[in-house]
Image 1 (tube, rainbow, N blue to C red):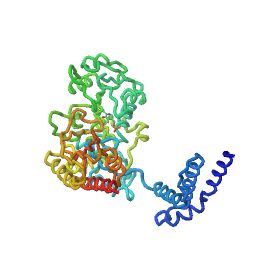
Image 2 (image 1 turned 45 degrees about the vertical axis):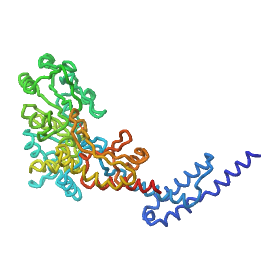
Image 3 (image 1 turned 180 degrees about the vertical axis):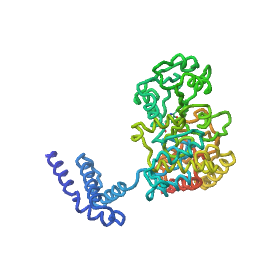
Image 4 (image 1 turned 120 degrees about the horizontal axis):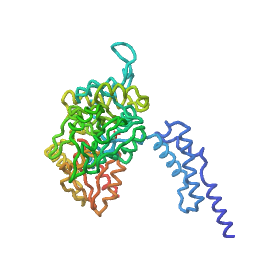
Length: 472
Ligand SMILES: *Cc1c(COP(=O)(O)O)cnc(C)c1O
């Protein structure tokens, strides 16, 4: 008997659910939703009804079966479905090249060139002087050569692609000599031995993790050797009892044996960075040292968009450009515009317009001013029981670059009332412009180094909104 009445009750609940047509009709009364395609709205109405049906069937008691609630659910789902998922966020972590947050923010010049060249047609592969088909690879070559001293260059999708293409074109089926201390893994997916294997080149490891001598390279050279390869250990350092041959010596060895010497530089620094206690090599230094080819990323220390650059001797670049893989790894027009715009900033001597360089070289005074501004914006919360304290921070370059350097920075430690740091962190992440902060021992830490000028007010507004919700 009890069984039957339960079943009847369930049937009654299911019968009470509104039909999809009814829900759709009501959804169309929403001003924003009604402008969306009917097929999308129908789909969302169906989903909203079926979600409630599932809950009824699962035996849930308190179910918002009211038509109103289901309609709201449908509208919300439709609006969510058409909103871009890729969004701007505020990076309050102080990690300048945050790989999870899109690495390098672009300069105005780069953004303008993207807008200008991509909103209509462009000369991407059209030679305006000759009036015939041109090459996308030639657009930025002169600028890269001017900035690096290289004879020629080619750009591809990213540095992983640059390394892969270089190896496939120069060393397929032959041996590439690499020091055991330089078999790097970057970002969990780029590993030198794996890339080497994929490219068809054979890795010949020499030396040991901490010490590799010139004679190790020399002893490894045979008929089978295609390249001597250096890999910049951009995301780690081996310290202590270590040695690697000088650039000049390995270059000289390559010359003597008529074997090209290449380096995967990673970071792609174009100008020397004045960093206390550390000298990160520039692309120009490597070219000047005599490397035949150098590969690097465009969206790390160079501060442009995602791209990979191979720069060096013309005869090798020409060989690489003939390889079939180039077509599969080719750079798209938006990245090319981001790269060329950024290179223009370098060429006119306006590096300070490149966000990555501006952030990495920000003076203590600039940082302290931003810190002061942020603290002032947040100060009204102190009356509501929050603690707002200026603090010293230590930022990282990130993106697998400059691993050893801690950049002394300025920040603000925010302690919300009632030990609610985790709740505020979630609220900031869900904010209209999501704000990404570090949480440490119940404090939200904002490092000002990676902020843009308008971010301080946004962070304060988001915190104030959490406070207002708490009161309600
Ligand atoms: C970052 C890096 C790569 C990978 O570059 P992407 O542009 O991220 O593909 C390869 N090699 C080195 C040494 C790097 O630092």
